Length: 207
Image (cartoon, rainbow, N blue to C red; front, side):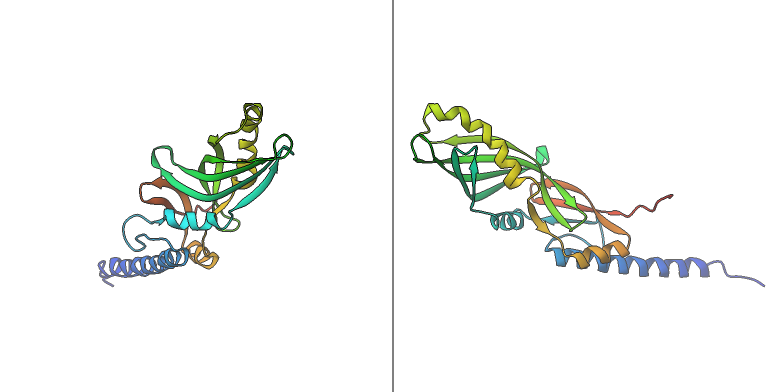
């Protein structure tokens, strides 16, 4: 029996197109549910988290107050965010209020800046600050007697208030649907336009 070979590629292309459309729908849902923008059906499979979205999520945590070294009552407020594409990090700035509790009981004002990387947490589908470090600390009018203590607690505040802080939560249903189509969030890259999250193929063990 003669078989027309051209029939096989036609069916293959049809199956591939159905898979492409299904995958595109999943990626589109991920983009819409997460509030990200990106091309889901053509070009790179990636979505961008905007600076405004991250700042809005971060602002929910502030103002925040802490007692440091049993000497200072510290308040951080008015968070600000700047993208650092060259370093693949963010710069975070805060207004700082410091009340010294032992010698003067005065309240001093200043600013505190941190930088941070980002990571995607698969357990709860969140984008979080990662490897936070203090960059600059300035307090107006602080007596020199107290200045030596100031540098000691900048790192403590970074660890307690910012390390692992959520800057975006992706809808879990969207993540699950993308996973069923063979995709998962992968590399996070800071760009001039925001933080780009690339969707990568799910690797199958043994393949």
